[in-house]
Amino acid sequence: MDLRFLETFITIADCGSIAEAARRLNRSPAALAQRLRALEEELGHTLVLRSGRTVQPTAEGLAILDHARMLVQGARDLQALAANGVPAGQLRLGATATALTGLLPGIIARLSADHPSIDYFVQPGSSVDLYHRVVEGQLDAALIVKPQFAIPKSTGWLTIRDEPLVFIASRSTPEQDPHVLLERSRFIRYDRNQWGGQIVDRYIQDHGLKVQEWLELDALDAIAALVDRGLGVAILPDWAPPWPQGLRLWKAHLPDGEARQVGVIWQRAGARHPAASAFVQACRSAGAEPLDHPG
Image (cartoon, rainbow, N blue to C red):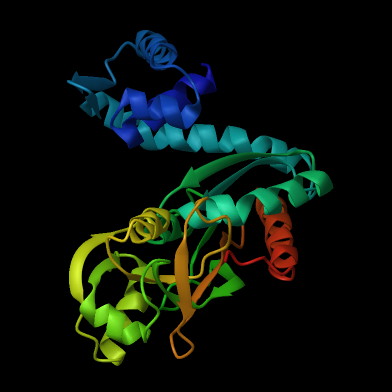
């Protein structure tokens, strides 16, 4: 049995869409559909049911899904185990949107130079989702916002950078006290369902601000772009560059605000522990290097 076919089935089941699975695996939808048909023919059962653009596992598909995960995971572990403690094999990582562009490229570049036998799978997502994926063992490590609660002893945490809160407005906005502008302007809010958004919400509540809430979303670059167009003001963590190009923003640091801590959470044990430890060390080195802040 070709393990790639099992991986295809698992990804389709997780995504609920062949098109989304194709994007995640960097293959064409037709190629994934062909792999899935071959697996179904080999097993003698239909594994997913199609309904429009979505798919759902059948009862037979659900029956083998967990076993398929274990088989694929075991195969990935073989290269790491054969390396006998040397970082090697596939390292399964997660990263938030800002970490994906601002932190992860430099960390992987450093790690690849030191340990060329490691290859990578990277899952983008929210801090909440990626945290649970690491805790459940689906990912080896992830770059996320630090949770506001104690993490399990099976995982480790390293803070890479503190991101202080900043008030942002369009460069055309007359400079005034940020608190005055926050109460007089439309407010574009960082999603309160996200850990970083909760830090912003605490700042607003702690300072008794009455904002004119207009829009709430979890996309810091999109919030910055909306502010650039003069559509409102916002409070955001001063995330690792790059910020979107061409923005003309007035930025004011909020010195009495709580910083968003960004770092790495990782699994302390497992076949890929040597590779995960090497990744953490690369993160530690990245955290020691100053990052330029956008103007």
